[in-house]
Image (cartoon, rainbow, N blue to C red):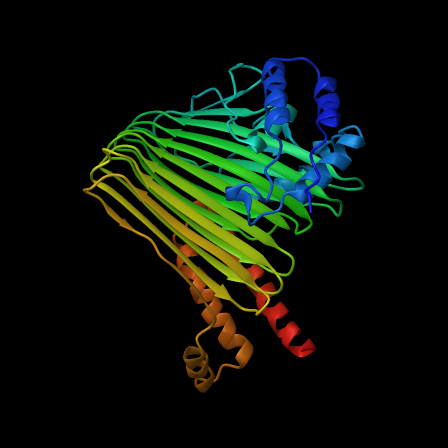
Length: 431
């Protein structure tokens, strides 16, 4: 069956209705590029497990209705709740609108913030969904980090969807100067009962000898769809420690592209995804080792229950001349239901000789011997399953690289795991 196509004419009408500003040339270029290449389909190798029909359907309904945008004022109470729960310098994008920061953003505290509309520069949109983002972008964030920043910098991307289908775009560029150190928190959340599609782009440029720690939390409504692209480049002898936690959303697609073109660069990135009935979570990662020595290590874990599907595709490419590369990949999955499905695809392409590379993936269920042992120690079946499931996730939660966000991550993960275990027992009662 042929996938419905995005209405380029409807998109053009909405784009042309946006007020002229410094982003107008980028919007027009993105619109032309998107019109030529379209939205990815199942025939594209990188998208063969993830059907973007819901993205096209929600977007077309929104475009047909004129591309209306909900005021961010409906979200102020929720924004205060989230930003008050984690001590950080917060930047907020609400319903696609960049709100003014509540902290001094002139660089005096090591954090300098500007909007795309204030400082025009061409956007790089090499991917179709980045084209879609740029075409509809109301404004974006440019953040520059200098020196050692004492408090984490948080970016909250929050949406409210009521009544009709809605679409929002967010774009942030973060530049970390050489010899600087900063902790970053990226928080995606949404509420409302109407269909919603959120599309985000983050570019992170880490200067030489800089140290960055980054936590990304995604806890959207399970009615909502999100696609996101993170592009990372690391300078000489720089260090980046990332961890992602995908807990909500109906359809989620995350793309992480890492460029290691300077010797001594070191990146560690981990991910935990928890999926229940009707959810689809897809993580695609790519690391290009262009020079050596440089190190990359990634570990993703998934816990799946009910009729859901998850995808992990991790690719590391060691280019010719990148001697001294150390690239490692691991993916482990725990299936709590016979209906749950995981598509795992680790990939290594090696064009150099003096390298250390490894990859592997596992898929399994809770160990019956461990369950039996816990039962003999007085735990009932439900509590025994809770203990083993939490243990599987706890390691990645404990490795959250930003201390200020760890308790929040732990609380959300615990709540989501409780829901998955409860659903598992409800399913057993029905059967």
